[in-house]
Image (cartoon, one colour):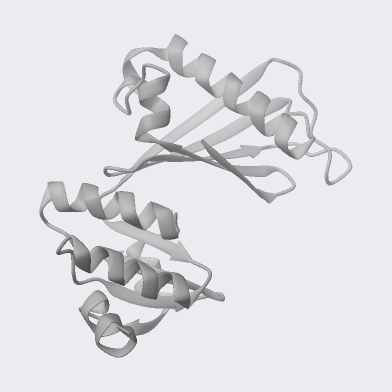
Length: 194
């Protein structure tokens, strides 16, 4: 599980499929076993509270983005923030949950060097293609794998070099700057394979 504080009242939690498996859960259990999910959610809030030295109380909005073969991302937004930075925890939480799926493999990278290293690793297992964009000082790689097995292998390697993005590919196409529109892995290898 990876935690990231986005704003004073917003936290991003990335759960891998392994994180869910270790807790005896699957993505489908969101709708089936609310007690297990409720416990996991409270555990995540406690960990976030300790990690960021904040407490959470009141109404909480939860957006869940299911990422194929990777796990899921939860964006937790607390409605009320006291003193702009301090969040209070009371034990009572009102949840509003929204679940969205994401079929594409879209990853965010801070350094271009990571994309070069990633391309070399992907080529070793015969995974090619992809589109590369830049947006707000980050690089985004959108992989277009059709084969489910290759998609899962690609997701594992992509996770080593970057972070899954919850950005919509449509938003990326609209606002991002295309760097390599097709065959990103092949193009990177052609220019940077030394």
